[in-house]
Amino acid sequence: MQTIYNTLTRQKESFTTIEPGKVRLYSCGPTVYDYYHIGNARTFTVFDMVYRWLTATGYQVNYVRNITDIDDKIIERANANGETMQALTERMAAAMFEDSDRLKLLRPVHSPRATQYIDAMLDIIRMLEEKGVAYRGANGDVYYAVREFPEYGKLSRKNLDDLRAGERVAVASDKRDPLDFVLWKAAKPHEPKWPSIFGDGRPGWHIECSAMCREVLGEQIDIHGGGWDLQFPHHENEIAQSEGVYPKGQAKPFARYWMHCAFLNFDSEKMSKSLGNFFTLREVLNKLDAVQGGETVRFFLMRGHYRSEINYTWDTLEDARQTLLGFYIALKDVPPADVALDWNDPYAKRFRAALEDDFDTPAALAVLHELRREINRSGSKELAGLLRALGGTIGLLQDAPEAFVRGAKDSGSLDVDALVQERIDAKKSKNFARADEIRKQLDAAGIVLEDKPGGLTEWRRK
Ligand code: AMP
Ligand code: ZN
Image (cartoon, rainbow, N blue to C red; front, side, top):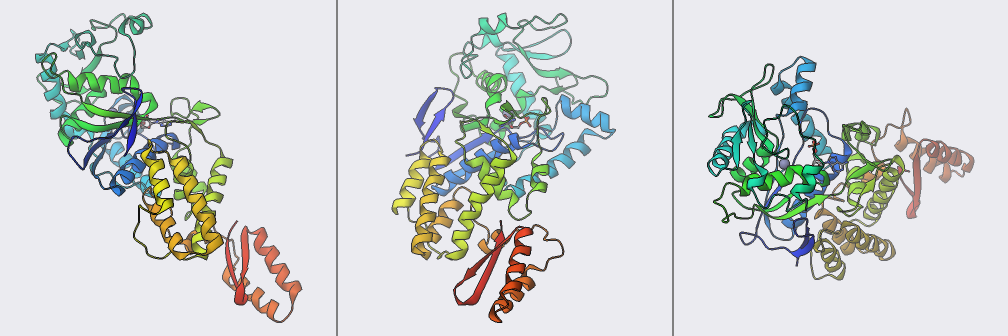
């Protein structure tokens, strides 16, 4: 039985879906004004894992990850670059997919862009106004009246009075309450705008997710995800918007399970664009081996439980690469048999129990380690097949082992295969000095030789 820790109830709950066998999964996606960093990559990888795992255990998962293609940062960056907002977001959305492919993220079933759902957002704002939870400020902005939604704060467990005490009342604000948030911003010069019954303008940030969830998945969804920081105000506001459209007291719960992925930190601080302490996924991948890099980062991100913070360092990344390499070496030495995944196998059972326990990837990977040791000991092709099949349920170990262990790193002018052959010949003619010299030369170039029975030699990256 799958369980999920639900931020809304602060409890691990058993997972049931609105429609039997089907999952409506929404996770907040990137704001496409720049390349995304490996902190963002962690959250995207976690929901990719959830998507793959629920699919592997028999659910039909409708996975939506939106693209935020309108907001202050985008407008600012496009103006600074002297390009249109569309040109910037097109370019960055394409780069986002490129980077995500390298990280082996499956494409979500839908990747809706905010600017294509303006009408759906306006519909919700209109409904909210009708219910008396949205109002127009004198400045032309439309706000959400948080005091009209008694359950405001239920996700983040924040109390309105405490929040207000911490809020400085903005001088020129048209808000009735400092916590009211903007749904529609009146048009300003040099900003994109859309016509509406509220006047020309553009949407606030939070409304886009309420609208895209509703349009693409329906009024109620099963799982809503995002990074830890999105609990407040973003997800709190999504709930207020999506549940505020119903007559008072008749609201249907918007999302049944709220999942939040803990931060990836750098130097013990949240990696973020605004702090400037970030590495883009792209720059990290470019520093890694082209063959091994994507899965290395993915593996590194999945080694921690999604609700625990993880720390990024070059060493932890290299350690992840070595460990992953160990798995691929096992699969190279014992070619996997093409077996169907048998959930009754004791290893498979334990692997499944780990992931069914709120997606406990470290525990699941520990089972794979045991399996690897058993494969190395027994040489069982069936177990190798099982290892590959289990890895596949969370997007690991699907590359050709031979190619993975060799990697792609440029070996300079060395023709590795020719040198390996020359060393074999040298050994045959008892020229051990030359054979040793070649081994040392390759070692210096980061290549490890493994002599196999029958005079064969295989090589791989260190
Ligand atoms: P953004 O493009 O900033 O809206 O972020 C996209 C997603 O990445 C959101 O779900 C964020 O919560 C998440 N995120 C941002 N920084 C981090 C981080 N350091 N670690 C994990 N997730 C993050
Ligand atoms: Zn969102």
